[in-house]
Image (cartoon, rainbow, N blue to C red; front, side):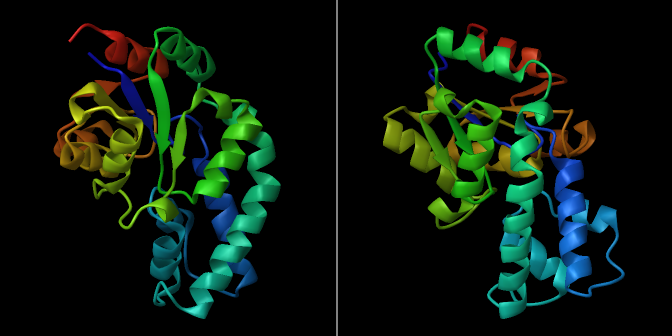
Length: 220
């Protein structure tokens, strides 16, 4: 029986890839960085911000250069993406979350975003009250694909991993679930392709959010 569902945010509940790429591109331009194309930026989505900018800038994650880029990104993200959260929801997400709540499941978010950014995005989307707990990369010692977020959520909410399922659009989500002893639904409409997702060994695949809900609610 599934009693607890964990959701990734970017690429799973909200279609934010284009806004993330545009925001990061603007940040890099403001810092005078050239030669980094949209695909290179897109490849960093799903990783913690400091790690992403360390790769894009070729600088240590704890450097002042990376810290400045992260600050600039967060400011633009709050300005450009957060206010658009409702329009960025994938089809079926609002109704699907309502259906899961009505079925008695506890819903949470496990993201590699900063917790405050995730909270702001969910609030703007009108979804924050659906979730009992929001865990960002800054709330754990190791971000996804490490199991820390999954273990924190199951422990804090008192559910054994066998009763929980992780929903996400990247191999990082699936690998986290596997390491934490959770089942997983890998969505094929987000960042990573179905072929790449299959390499991580998800429990199920889903091409849209209504199918995600069906998988979660199906009898074991």
